[in-house]
Length: 106
Image 1 (cartoon, helix red, strand yellow):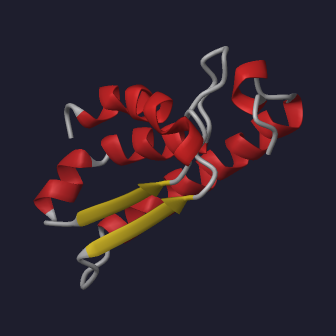
Image 2 (cartoon, one colour):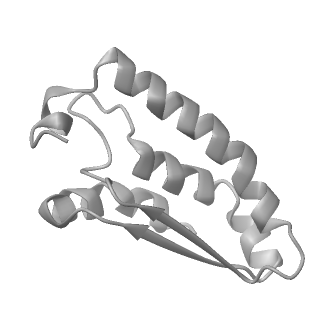
């Protein structure tokens, strides 16, 4: 992925891929939250980047965090542990700043 991928904004193809991933994740994640016998849910995004492009369009990492935050009540009620790995050494500080909003309430 190009170094300035997030700084230039997502192109139409990337936006479509993110939209497809987001729909899939939003359908799949609650299944794991409500599954009996599953105590820990591991999610990895190895291309997290900054989490959003220069126009504020969410990448996969912020879509994942947003979806998880929508299920906080169920996660707590069902005593689930969600382990989220967002990997991008070069963009770590930007990504951390971009996800703080979601983590404060959950």
